[in-house]
Length: 480
View 1 (cartoon, rainbow, N blue to C red):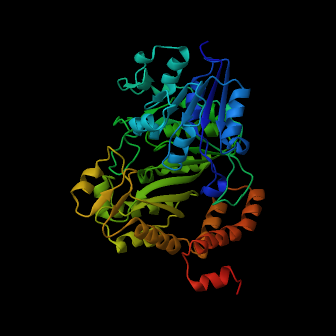
View 2: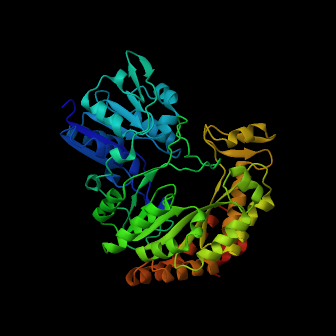
View 3: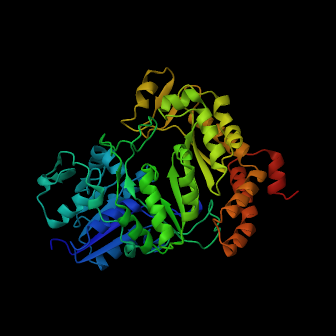
């Protein structure tokens, strides 16, 4: 074998205290590391979020030298900590080949090669097959999708066609050195473990706002589903109590989703499932009944906006009336519904943005997440932003306008949050989670104890950032 010990590094340094639900598995690099099995004598996967002793660069390098690592593969996926990870890459040993992959690496190939002279190769796009060819010692010029440095020059090979999803092995969880546990905004709600499953890749829809419909190469991953048997096998191997299906839409193929539910019920698999879906699933009440019986406790729904003109701009394929009608159906089933919204849209007024909280309450969604509009390089919305006077898109894909600056949009976001998340709303959330049996009785006792602490912590965090008035400071800080 050309390489003895391959180290796959997820370099993000953060804790559950910085995340809404805790730390999610680094699924992308886990897929790539699993594909490398059998091609090296030893394979190590390090997630620095679980490796506090190795967050110091000197200790990390000592680990690599002690373990005789002879090839390093790093995942660069997110905007957050981008600059810090670039600096980290420049501190890597000179004598170990450095391979970088992930969404941001694909997006910023030229920049990374210029800024990080120690990078030898960048894997563009999906890397499962490319890492196999690299480890087998294939000539670099023959590896499609690879950019590499040779003799002081950078070469970009042609893009690689997207692989068949059924040719890709699902992650080997024995490679992990830490578990994912549920928390809410840094508060350890319970000791419950959770995991993710990617049962399909891509999406058949063409929502214009979506930052993942096209990869940074402009390639669209059309909807491609794994076999039902492989999905069930993966679920049965998972020890965690809660499983999140990270598909763009788990219910794209209704018959397939129904078959998976049938097998979960038939085989007596006792898990709590969370899945992403479109509101169109309300058209299938029999399926909603079946998924509830199979253990699906939470559906994550892309609602995006209460305004018809925004929904049309996004090419969502439904309007406000349809949303309201769907939620009338949703209310009939013991499922917790979390809605996603986008604000700061092109042409949107502050009044329209603030209506998100009221609309969410009107339709009866249990909780919401809302984000400022973003757009990536190939987003169809970029043309609209470019031709709309006063709108701007940063290099990071953040959208703002002359009227609504970044600070102004953050302020509006805080208004939406505190308009929706009142103490009464939090109590309703807890009640609904109890009704759908998301928590066991033992876990529920813990939740009841920490829930007031969670609300107080959120308020104190806002106070610390000077986001609330003197009256709330007196209540929560001075205990008056």
